[in-house]
Image (cartoon, rainbow, N blue to C red; front, side):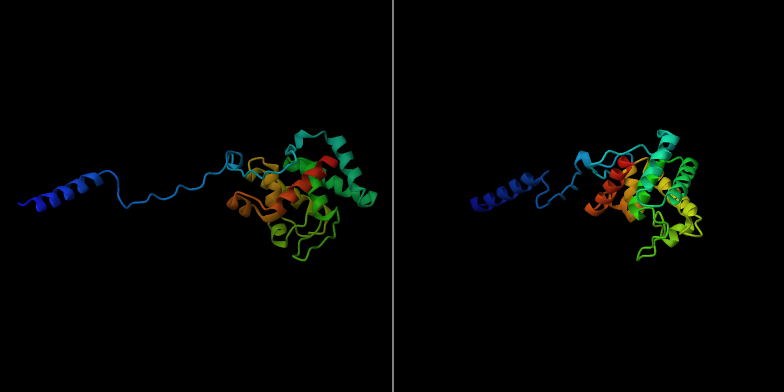
Length: 207
């Protein structure tokens, strides 16, 4: 073996051993982006990042008589005294039945229809809580323009969303607007949805 051949063999052997354990030519995949801790979902619920404090969601959190009077007074800003009493009575009755904060139900209805039981959107959403026909049917509402039926359906649906999102009022309100599946899937809400949630919560504190 001449000197040149020996040198070539030596270089080849060194190159083999120098590549061991280094996965030459392999580029590891980039790790998935990490969500900031402040926006990580907790107990399966999204962080809606609203700027208004969440009120309690359950019925026991409010004093019934003073709450009823406050809701009635607020509704009378928009509707006749007789209609205000009718709407207030229905909200209180169904909120007690479904164990949800009646002021929260009233604030949602205020944002949806300003307590107009005949409200009808271009998409067919009806009445106080602006229930879509398919949603109303699933909730047992046969007349979406009936005050008591619509108040029942709105209250029942909102309660189901609060339960679905493990007590998060903001997430429940977002789900009411865009649908619970959209909120749960995306893990975030749009600026439009955030504004809606903050509107409802702001009204809550005005009642």
